[in-house]
Image (cartoon, rainbow, N blue to C red; front, side):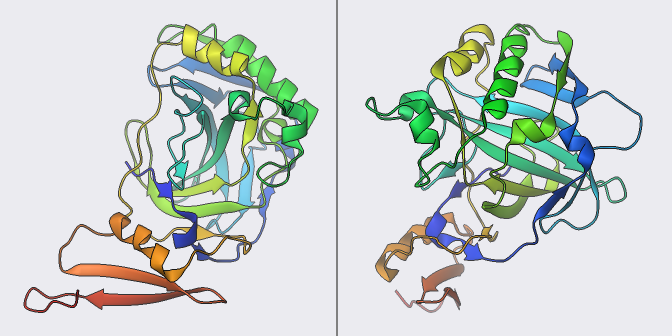
Length: 287
């Protein structure tokens, strides 16, 4: 299982073509919501073609929608499985797709931000308009999630299910331009490897009442902590990342491979990242 702390200044810029969602994403469909013992899983229950197809975004081939589920914790500062610069969000949404030819999985992850983390003098609606950390969220997206929460919170015991009509495009919203990308594995059993992870930068803001409906009625805390980066590279498709000084780049070292003879040091210049690979043999010491 690979879930990461996204140290933004240690990421590498790479341009990706935009995601393309088939038109069926804009139509409401029946989903079976089930408490599977790990989360509330929403499965696409309509077998008739066309499928919910996803292409682009740097994905290799055509992917079909499988399910979506949420992860949450005990409070507004815990719950997301990814974290950004050491900070967690209240929860995380995973939309899971599969390539029917190669059986590779791709997960689109969105952070759930709690209204409790907003300054007391700032309304939720005005915070949603603050482009410093959140772009506008459409009312229909908020309403669709409210409908989801009102039903999903009743699934308090394992194997209980219910059918709900939902619109995937509305649930996802329109803030799908900026994201991080890496390869990892699933976070719930069977923890499948070689998963293409897309973690969107802009969170969706939920009220504490919505999140508390899960915390109080569904008893398991459904998240795991971040894992070491090892030799993985995290890419970002946006170029306006804040650049720290070179001395601050020691932050990257703790996420590297645990092998004592193999270190990767990442430095930055005014244009982009410069990677220097230094191999330290047992008989030589450079530091």
